Image (tube, rainbow, N blue to C red; front, side):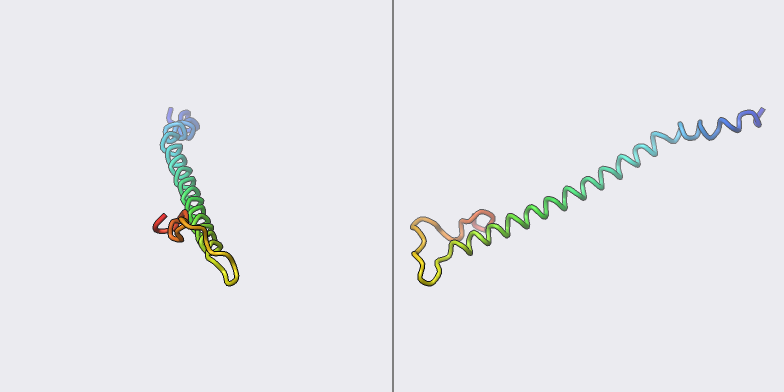
Length: 83
């Protein structure tokens, strides 16, 4: 009788193990997605900081140029420690 049931053991085992393997794959996919999102967030912050520094640098008066308009503090640029 056990010889007749042997071919059924593998499909039954697959069905029994499916929820665990499915959950494991879902967790792995979530970790990969979370890592990608964290990398994109870090890159976005880096770009924002770069643009803020470029804004401040371009706002500084140069030799022979007109002074900055009143009421434009240099430390209030977006992305700086004070702004």
